[in-house]
Amino acid sequence: MDALILMGSPRKNGNTAALLDAFVPAMTDRGWRCDTAWLYDMSISPCRACRTCQRDWTVFGCPIQDDVHTLFPRVLDARLLVLATPIYSWYCTAPMKALLDRLVYGMNKYYGQTKGPSLWAGKSVATIVTCGYPPEKGADLWQEGLKRYCRHSKLEYAGMLAERHMGYGVPFMDEDKARRAAAFAEALNRRAGGGEAG
Image 1: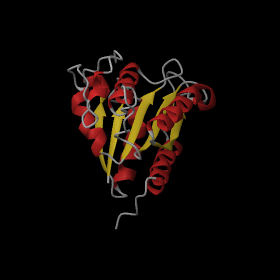
Image 2: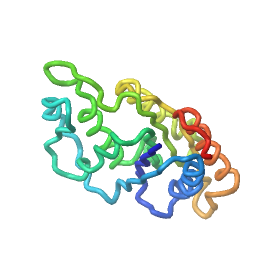
Image 3: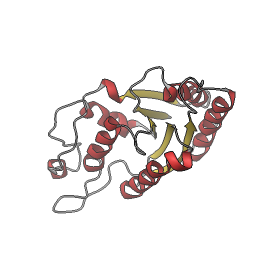
Image 4: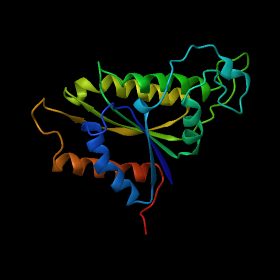
């Protein structure tokens, strides 16, 4: 089983990466192959809503030549997508937002003269976030937006792990967060239809 982690943090050793350090081994222990795409290392231009991608329902079809073309097949090959991001201004980071805009057009062939299919229908989507506010006030708008995105795209929303950082000078990662990250992996394994590794 393949999981693609779309990593929206600019920091290789930041809080979101620390959660993934606990999450990924728990997934691999359950038989998942985890591939991580660091979005800040890629060229991801914003969508122009030109709708060129709607002309051919069998391909991504975006005329913007950047790294999103390399992500498209990785997204299609994955059974589970994990959107990992710190919360900036109550939403995901800029490269993740740009990617989601590009994918909502390139994957959903709804916007041409004739309505077409969702190329990624049925995939599971989960999110791992870090924020400076209590999650119910810091990550709630992101979660609601992602739920709506999933419904629109015929994706299965599989849940959110949100952890708060209490401020600069305070260590972020602890045993409780690591335990919750492993528990989230177990919950995703069950929800996405995986079985125990054996």
